[in-house]
Length: 296
Image (cartoon, rainbow, N blue to C red; front, side, top):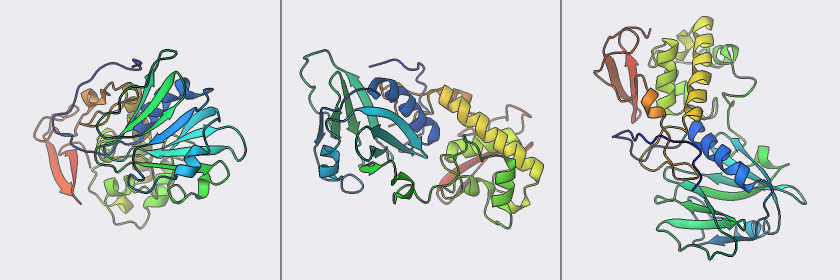
């Protein structure tokens, strides 16, 4: 497999946590150079559905087309193809999905199917393999014109690493909201891709307590929080994401952003900034971590 990044520190208690924006962006960036410009020779499905049925006929319609690139919308990968209507394969990793790109020598036989491997795309000297033990992933087909209104994409919120996301945006969407700050950041209809780990880390970096009411944020705090979210997500992408038990990149290497976590899963330990103890609480089944001293 291709070594896009190195590292591999696995957090001890990460079990079946959903890959978020940095993990999906890492997969996208790793896969695109090896699929773009290659012709799809075949699609094989080992089952009819994952989380939802897979459109076998539409997927077969991609065969013979050339991949023109891979983009990302929230946690969805969009593999674009040439030809009439510019179709796209829409992929979601779910909780345990692995989107792997395997190089193949010219004329080499295809490898045996792995346990929990559900579909493949054959690009000749590159084989895409999708492995998903819990089958919460998804594979669908849309086209360039219909992507924005696709049922899985149409209600998604603002991308945090694209124009339009800043302190003014956060200040606007937080007014009159009694929900907690971290809950707002994780609302995919408002803001996409900021998962549990990255929300806690961003709040720490911005010195904002994650469990305070969103409407209580000042404009200055919204500016700091928006900047922190961009910084944390960018750093996580640079590190290849944060590896969970199931998440790996397209070459099966692990992400190592876990080495940079300041508060997440560090309850009782001293804050790296002020040395006060890190606190922990559970909100809606999700763990929240913050510094008891410097986050207000």
